Image 1: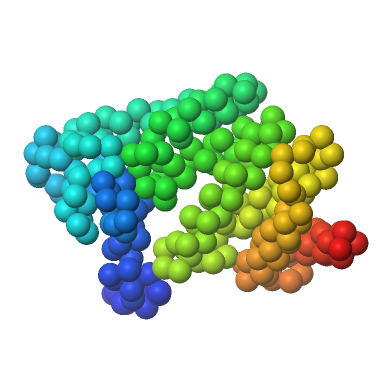
Image 2: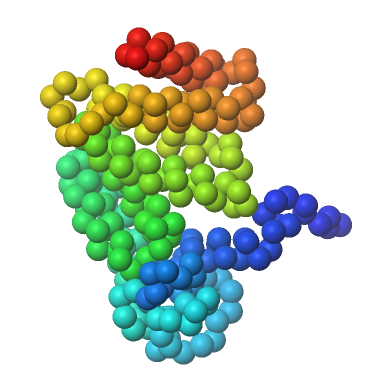
Length: 240
């Protein structure tokens, strides 16, 4: 027997439809348009339209930001980019974090103008680049990629993800760690770092709330997160 789901995602059909398209969408040619040229290269739904058909924005009917792209070309490109994700992770597993980082970074730059920033391929590339950069101690890259992941996942938490999603909590923790590292690195003199502690604290606080919901106050993970937040809060008061 089936029961109708009443979760926020299922109840907000129109919003969900638009949000889910960004996960597989190509950027619209109109930079002011909020729509995407939806294309799931690995969709299981039936789509009998010719592979030569060009991708079209479902909102304004424009083409893609990189010109005329056929379904065949889009599928080929996405297959190549997904293969790069696997290669980056494989190099990381084998301990070659520099090559892992390079592959993820180069591929992310290659597809950034084509795919929506929330596209699953961009998301997975950011995760691969973040993981490699943590091993390399490149905290600026870690902060930038983790921040983009947090922004993307937090936006989706309205209807695609629960706000306590472990992936979002982990991205917040990684971002906060990177910001604290950069702030404490006297050799890093790239611009003003005064806001880094504040941003780190915002993410640590949000992570604590997520873990409370997911595991409860007495869980070790929650206690450790709260302890790190309290230490950071004390540091911020001292710095002020």
